[in-house]
Amino acid sequence: MAVIQIESIPDELHRSFKAACAVEGISMKDKLLELMREYVDKQEKKKGKK
Image (cartoon, rainbow, N blue to C red; front, side):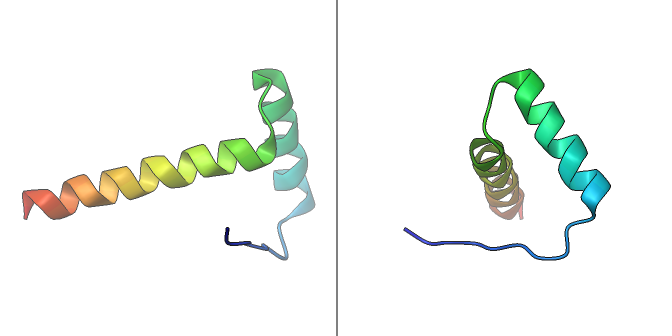
């Protein structure tokens, strides 16, 4: 399995994202995976429409 490391995330963005994930009851990792899947699905649908 691949590893992605993101550097230089603004502190306020990190805090806000962590808090939003906590409210949703989901880990930051799981939320990022969900967002990545949604993005890839959207791009694949766009590509299919061309």
